[in-house]
Image (cartoon, rainbow, N blue to C red):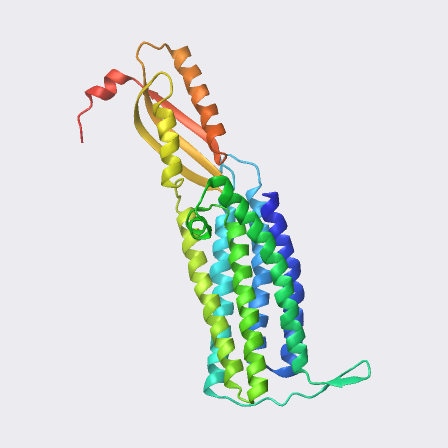
Amino acid sequence: MASSKSVVIAALIANGAIAVLKFIGYLLTLSPAMLSETYHSISDTGNQVFLLIGIRYSGREATRGHPFGYGKAQFFYSFLVSVLLFGIAGWESAKHGYNALMNPHVEHAKPVHLLGQTFDPVYVNYAVLIGAILFESYAFIKAYKAMKIEINRRDWSGFREAFRKTSDVTTLTALTEDTIALGGAGIALLGVYLSRATGNPMYDAASALLIGLMLMGFAIALAWENKRLLLGESLPEEEENDLRTMLKKSEGVTEIIDFRTVYFGSGKVIITADVAFDPELDTGEIDDRITQIENEMFDANDHVKKVYIEPEVQEETASQPVV
């Protein structure tokens, strides 16, 4: 949790400063790509605010109305980010770029006078975008390291598998957002440069459109990933099978009748199981076996936070008709 929060705070500071600088660059040059990048950075900043709210809200203690706590708040606020921020920002960016492509015209920005010097305002765009790449690189490295730690801890093959399986949507969102931000700043820089070098405004406009499409693509991917967790996803199959096997081999267990896992927050899993025990065990011995099994599962997987094992009478389960 602390790692996720530090990643988000780093991205919030970087994106807030970058958004202001990009907007200044747009006002000076009226570049479509700079306006798209302004939308992008504003949405990124709002993204971090929502994620911080999700982290704070998810840390609330469990209540009678929410007996398992508020862990899923992170999934909800990350979903809001994808729909409200990146969807809208992506649409506005793409629409602005499309309009600029359909109605191309060269903007003649006035020279900038600063500290007794006069210079072409396009250099403001260059400086802002290069600065954005540096800031975003810093935020990207922090998010990359945080995700890499989870990949190594869970023995995943790489980032593709992590994107499909991780429950740490806060770090996932930050990492993906920083990746898109780096790509967007690079595309904008190239578009602004080519338009100035060739005198053709189409490059700048095309960059704005491409940035918008990237944002909308990210919105769809992020919404899809949060959907699986909001709907109650289980542990990855191999991890669930390892826990099931552990339970099956536990002393006194004769049969696993039902076994289920589900995420109830970032890195928080509930296990429920109906288990048949050796009929020669008395109630006290069964309770001891259950306590031992719970502790073994907590040790085996750090995402397991709650375990509920319901003992079944073997003779009754054996006599039930097969469905």
